[in-house]
Image (cartoon, rainbow over all chains, first blue to last red; front, side, top):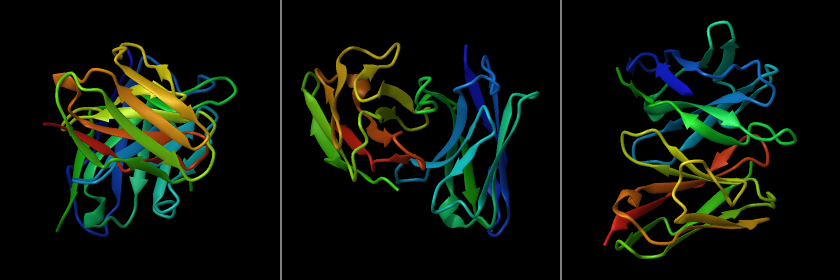
Length: 124
Length: 107
């Protein structure tokens, strides 16, 4: 069955770069119409979409965070990596990766499988 | 960016109640609207996509309606497992965006 798992540091210091890896199984990011997204949930706040990468290596980012984010994929390892530069306390939260599926005419529309999440705390 | 406004932000209900959650988009998004259930410490769960299509494995007491700018999630008979926070999300354009969430609590 489809699984995704997030990995990365639990604690990051302010101004550092956070790097998270999503390792997935039972699907391939070479499949047309498939994407992987990153979403986070800050404590006491709402879900926030961060970035998406598609089967053709197209990438899109959150408007407010796009200068700080980079998403990439390694299809041979079934991994997607998200980097976030210059982190601050407001970046504390649980980070999820999710398989993103859709239709032939409108791909990558909904997040149908999610990882369990990686809790990241930004603190000195 | 397309803004999504959910109402109410929280509600109290009893088991067996019919619960309605609204989501309004800042511009027309056709039927590109999805709903998720989030519980503490758990992976979010896709409930409905394209406004009204029920995700595999989701109980039929969940339903969704709407198109354009106004959408509704209905839980027809609230069960103990349904106490959670619910989010709408638009997939009409990038960047994708979520509503601010609706917390469903036990009355």
